[in-house]
Image (cartoon, rainbow, N blue to C red; front, side, top):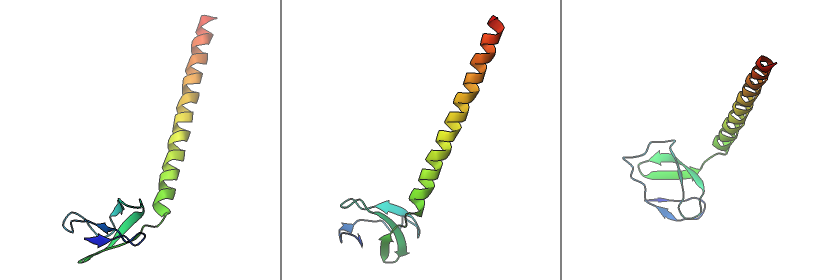
Length: 84
């Protein structure tokens, strides 16, 4: 058992299934937690750096989708040229 540093809820964590640095979420308060110690299991609030990485990934995916849309528009224009 480990204790959430945010809400003091007890969280059941199997020390054999986790590694130091793994992330998990508190089922009580929803806080993102990082495993900082293994024997005994110690938890700390995870840094928000990981959330920023997710935001960057979403932005890149949106840019890629936008680029694909532009490519499709070019294909349509080329098809229109053939009709002339």
